[in-house]
Image (cartoon, rainbow, N blue to C red):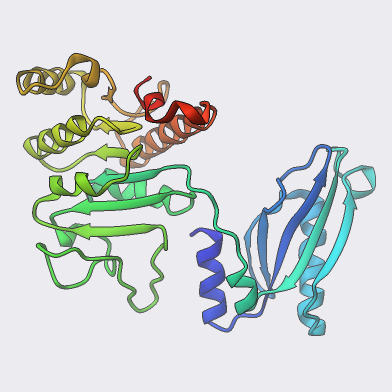
Length: 298
């Protein structure tokens, strides 16, 4: 669960907590300005970098809770021998009570990527578990409502767009939308320019139709298709016959996942694929802003 979602959950549950924020850094520091952590009497969510700095921050936050202090409080920490850390920099931490105003002022975290993920099978679910913790925007698409985890789609069934629905003891990730529709390939048109796509459905013919729709758009930043080199070869042969250029097909990633991570377990595949998407997003972030979508083709 991402930290803003945890903050909403704690606040709605009436759980007293302090927001600890890295306000400023000087020199080397374990986290960047803007990093946050939530501290309750009996729990901690997020991190400001670990080590003795974080232990002291938790201790001060819990002291504030015990004494009924609301803050805000600012404190400067030198990351040297006195703190048992050798970063050598300086961190200024801010402490404030978690309330509606603090939640409203929580700045949105820039998304690494916008993803359409096709397939709610074992690999799709493992990937979503990792994406729940990352700053991204995701549409998770499948025609089979029963394949989504319980509480993720409304009981309206296929044929209608079904956003994530809350169930008892369930809090939906605010950045992930479950979409259950019959014609899943039609959802390709809903993605913004420069989107990421992952195709891993339960049927090769459906994978082919989705990939064709994405390749015909041409404005994607990443297209990953689950499968072997043999599957890629067969898809390329069919898509070339349908008029997709070899240059466009070369931009399709299949097999998926960064090199060097081996294994067929869904969890291992998920780690390799999510790492590949983050790597791609970081590469694009270093591209000059005026290159536009042309960068997606490289």
